[in-house]
Image (cartoon, rainbow, N blue to C red; front, side):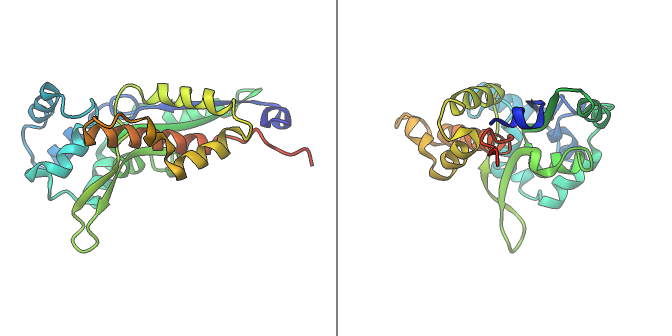
Length: 226
């Protein structure tokens, strides 16, 4: 028996970007204004011209590699979130979705913006576990960003969710269990061409990990009758 048969509602997964979708401003611009860092757009344009990273992943790259951004700490990112100007009535929209008969909506945010920024900006509106942004590894002693754990960048992230969901639903154990296994085993790494640059491999894998985490949270289709 499926989750739809038990609840009587059709499950709908909604995925949204953050910067200039739920917000009016780019997180990087707000961060630079707060810390008096000049030339953010020029840096982004320079990265775009040399095709070093996927579109949307410029801020994470700068936070890790640009000397002027090396002073940014986790608390700065959280403070940026409080300065972000959100689009109006996001919370009201989610309340309206909850009132639609015959459908249950699960809303997730997938963005290359730092996860701390998004969680801070959307605190009290969208649960933190439904937010999938860039994750960093911090130096435990001084709080400096050491490395990037994942960057959900590129226009293909929503398409990846749909493709993964469609494929996982064909598997006998259902999407949630299969997504969990794929995330733990990382078998998708076998799809990467050996000659691909390391930064592209990591961006691909970070996108897939983010999508699998979303699919793991989808209502199960294996609900037992008893």
